[in-house]
Each structure stands twice: as structure tokens, then as C-alpha cells.
Length: 377
Image (cartoon, rainbow, N blue to C red):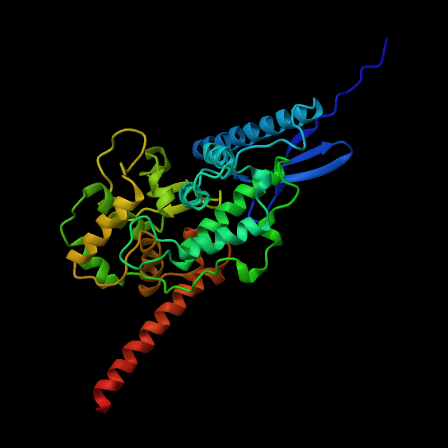
């Protein structure tokens, strides 16, 4: 009887145990005698309850979809389908990146919107010039960086240009698109990586805007202009959920009996368990459909929340992320434990959460100095 030859898998899905008990999924690829690893930023969580099983099943499905895609790519390369000099139009490549965002970027809405916005500015930058992915070099990236820094935002006031943070975000999106081209063999190296730091857009330090407990109380006592949007914002202030997480929050992720939310965060892929307060429950809509909140475009939601805050006589700059800062600072203001708050927010380190404690200390110092000013006159 002839000995049966075992066919070795070129792409294997493996798991690495992490210190927090989760398992990080990665691909072990062995092609042409070379081994490479691709960490998927997907994690299996411990536990045998129904919710853990459901989350792990979804994670495995996403991981196996990426594995299947990589196997096809390897097979195509071996068959000579994909050539080194393959020429793909830059806009086709950007559009393919947008199309595959859910699998490759763990469904990040922020990343998706950033890549779409970058495409908008790239259209104006190229002004109809036919450009292929392998035409993009360091000089191209340098000129695009300069263009962004001189550009006007989509909805601009007279003389207004893109903020430094927006420039940085859109330029980073180009870097992501080009890195994806490197992985697929369309570029040898990422030209953004070869740039001088001085030629890249710089981010600016911004103050974290948050609402105090008194301001939040005043806000929720103010009539809502949109029950779903304003309710979702208040819910985020009371749970610490990011906008990307509340947009995708499903009813089956809320356990009313145990009074908690069990949610896999879009940004990090980690699963967090968040206690659900009675106040937070007040802002939940009537149960209907799969998703908890029926939300609109982010631009519109931002304008609704800012209008609501203005009616409540709150003059601070308000964005949706203000809600997450508000949860952290209100919790600390009321004597909440720093470590517990860090876990709820899904921070990788307590040091990240300590920033909010520093903000509160600064506010206290400011209050005392105002008192000094009044008494010393």
C-alpha cells in the first residue's frame, strides 16, 4: 500500500493566549519556503455562556473568511494570475479598500468614513489625471500632504482650511490604502514610510471636552430635538460606549436580567461588560428590530447634539466623543474606581484613564484660583 502524502496547508488559522484570558487569532502563512504571520486583531473570549459562544462564532467566521481570501491569493500567485507588474488604478484600489473594510478593518466606521473622505480630496488633487497604484511614490505623497493642508473642508466657512487633525487622519488613510497594496504585492514598499517626518501632516493637541455632572443633568432636562439621536448621546454619556459601538448595538447584547451590556468594541475587537444603570435604561427606545438605536449620518447627528447642547445653555465645544469623556469624568467626579472605569472603557492601560483624573484636578485648581482672584481683589 502506497504511503499517503499529507498536503501541508499554506495558510493556517492559529490562536495565541493573552494575559487577560482572551485568545488572539492570527494566520500562519508558509509560501515558497518563507513563513509570515498576520495578526487579525480578532479575539476569542473565555466563557461557555450563550453570549460568549455567539461572539466567538462571529469572530471565527470573520477569521475564516480572511483565511479563505488569503488562500485564494496564494493560489492565484502560484498559478501566475497575479503579476508583479500588475497595474491597478488608484481609485479602483481605494474603492476596493472601502468595499472590504468590514473584514479587513474589523468593521471600523471611523476608518471607513476617513477613507471615503480621503478619496474625496484625492479626486480634487488628481483633477482627472489617470493614476495607477504603482505611480504613487514619496513625491506624490508629499504633494498630497501639502494639498490637504491647504484644502477647505467640505462644509467650510470663508477662509477656513482643514484642521491639522483632519489632515493627519486623511493622510493616515492614504497610508493604510498603500500598505494594503504592499501586502497584496502591488507596491514593493509603502512610500509614506519613506517620507521625511517634516513633510507629513502633524496632529494638534486638543483639549478633551466633557460635561460635568451638573451640565449633563441640565442637558437631559432640556427637551430633545430628536429622541433617537439625543437619547443615544445621553446613553453613551452613561455607559462610555463609542459612537461606532452604539451604532451597532443590538438588543441581544443587552442582558436586562443581569443589568449589563456585553459588547465587542469595533475599534479594538475586545469584549467589554458594562453595567447598565437605571438612568441609562431611561434613554433606551422601545424594542423594535435588531439594532437598539435608529441613527442617521454622523454629520447630521453631530449638528443635532450641538443644537441640543446650545439650547441647554452649554457653551463648550461638543462632539459625539464628548459623551465618552463625560462618562469617565462624571464617574471619577462621583468617586468611581479608576481601575473599574478603565475596564468599562476598554482602555489597554489605567494610564490612559488617568488622563481624565488629571483633567478633573485641573478643573479643581481653576476653581480655587477663581476664588483667590475674587478674594484678593
